Image (cartoon, rainbow, N blue to C red; front, side, top):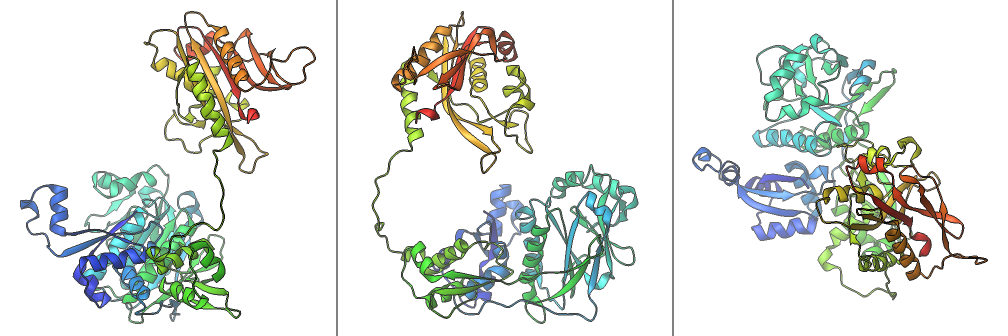
Length: 591
């Protein structure tokens, strides 16, 4: 959850009212926020640096640190917070954002080669804007908050803001080799190429974390104006030529991205928040973005979405009894301009471009609950009665865990994720023949796939405890995941019981005895003669087991597991030196 720091006196000035700390905390709580801390810049720096003398000149203005929900990007700056609180208090109506057509639109052309590195770009202009020190700092801080959260540390989106009066359109978004890029980076005096810039910022406290995003690419993304002036090298740094100052009156905003949806949200958020400082408030100048195929898209979109909700459902879901008109008023206070349709039950809700967090009707019902006040919702008993019971599969699991432990086995709980070798090569199998669910971008070699067997986890546990006296008898009852195209999500869970006996001799009779005990507890008989139901063992070949010492566990003619003596090469792969026997089978058929 991101936290923003705002100066208390400046906040109260813009809200038009002074509050005590407790009163403001109650206002934040009513709006769904949390006042995390009341502090000063001096106190914060002292806490970080631990040296009182070093921060002697720091400001002692009171700062409110407020926790903001991660999906409320419109509250990450003073402007958005003040506007939302004023709307919530009913002091102003939700602003209407509009595009103002200039005499000539600015154009940003995307060249085809950008597809190699960052394929998307959007742009807009804030015209006749006025910055003071507080607004300027808030503008920079909002970009930083968006970069750290929604933009995933600039990996998805990088924001560039420029003084439009220092550059000339049309602009071009290109991808060039590092040697062919020359410009003076922000707040520097030396002209650098791409390689020199990477070396220069490799030790920079803030920017070094962004260098790996493009460093290994043969081309770097770069934006030029009509005169060949470099605006920015996203996602690293802007050019010094077009930097924003307190004297800036027209701002050109460009966002390059690997995720177009995120870029649209970022652009909408930036222009909506800071259009309040324009001469004509809440207005934005659109830009034309020419795509590589020649099509032209106008940004920002500033889409106002409309949806219809049921007042009856809102009351039922939240547990209140309010009239449709009051629910509409509550939604309007939450920045969602609403009105009641004819008939009285349906409410039309307008979702502004600042509320990209609203994706479903349930998000709107949540805002109704916030506006109503969670503390005002009366506690009540459910309108129906139902006796709860444990999920049958979990109940069986708990019962078997106790009984297997009483049979002399020690329970182990192993990782659900494992390496490909653990379920394949070490068990003398091919990974291509195993219906495993693979992790798309594994961070370590130890966690590449979701386990398809419990056996490998128990063998790794044996290795970690091989200094313990023999025999070692371990078991686990847990889920494995098997890829299955017939299921809705392409995979299914399967609850299994696995047990391993490790001793000077394999002790096949130990695991066989455990299997018989479990079947006895489940009241499943051994199939003999003409008996139709029951379990039995059937010889099988499995590369993980010793030839001639492996069998399938059959239940009513269907194989549900394996039992046998593990192959010596399996033991060697897991670095075990003592023989082992194992049993593993699916317990779901017994539920």
